Image (cartoon, rainbow, N blue to C red; front, side):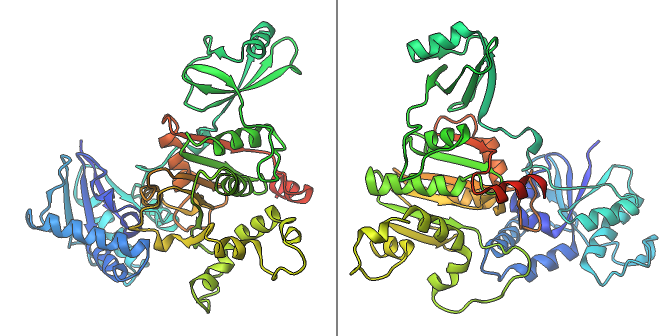
Length: 441
């Protein structure tokens, strides 16, 4: 039996393609959703763009027939706009004021549930609306089409126990077959331990059905030396030009941003593989927003990009002295920008660009939606490398969680691709205080 899905506004603003994500089932949009979409269409950000996209899709469907009666979605189901159930005459509790759009949307789901036998499900990313629906006995759920199982998210690392002879052969020959270890993803890393003597181990990387020794570590990268095996794995991917998409996840202080910046500078300044280092991050506040910031674009971006400036200053901590006392005082970021080596850009201005031969770093990628991730990754031009870093457990976006954010989605979708690699960093190296806070608080 086909189901009827009543969509909330935030689902469409999160993913405009959600209109067509329910296959042979019916999709109902309460009129209140259209009104809220209309309120958002003039915004000059991703939400405004999604609102306009939804409006265009509905206008296209309108040409197929009356939306009030429903039109074919192209996937076997139907899409319609519901005009009824706009009053409390259907038994909807009067305590829920219909002046509020959320209650009018819930009222539609309630009314449809009363009048039809097929299952009715309210789809919303609003936790409180799902709670109210549960109180009224209306089935509700989050939009699950772009969610992944975070508890089983690909880490990029496997620990295996092998016979001591196999580990000796690996060191002697410089390679080892999978030997019944099962399928492995491209660029997946292995920690191989001796069954009889756990202190004997080896680190390997999977390439073409074979386990090979690490190439780039533990060498120094722009003054940074990896402090643990996960950081060694991360640098292995970051320093390999063949791996064009790298994702790094981990808790605060594990070195994700620092390693990415160091490898980017190594590639741009030392190896000359890329023309420029382009750094961006989403503008999502933690806590109360401070409002508009004065100055030009660079001055407005400075508070949001300060973590990146801090890491650059650390990487160039010995550089100002090398220029001599007569050199004009200038921070590392300002110096690199003036030399055309570094570009710091807001994601707002990425759309429409083509970015060839650049090392691109997107920090705090857990605050991006899957659609925003797609927008950014499709900007990558010929000869560029892009790195995403973030912590899926530290999300400031109101409608994202560890399973639905763009970083987790990207990790799961690209894990089997030859040009991508992922590592989850687990050990904090910022300071003892930071590690203690990450573990206990």
